[in-house]
Image 1 (cartoon, helix red, strand yellow):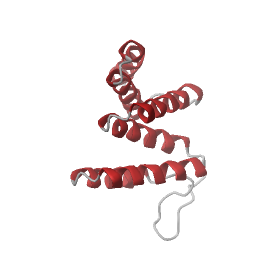
Image 2 (tube, helix red, strand yellow):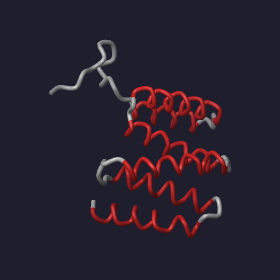
Image 3 (cartoon, helix red, strand yellow):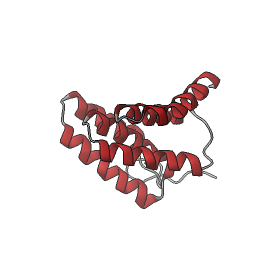
Length: 133
């Protein structure tokens, strides 16, 4: 089965273009455009949800986790952590370096917001995946 692609940009349909999104976020970060980063992440979070793109949503949540941590936004940072960890727990998506990075981002944000003890299992999960892969 071949993956359906958009006629105008030749990207797969049914999922968000995570590589282009990360490139855009990185370019906005290079000029310290925090509002722009937040707008891009919010927009693509909505698109991932609308497409039911769980993997894409997980990548966006991971970006938001780091963004909210750097902005010292405890409430939204920990909410994104909770949702990302719930996705990882309920979805049968296997292990990958990308998912290890999500665990690491979650743990780092939990620690930053005073939840170091709760973060330890996720540091260990990330370490285990990184070492295996």
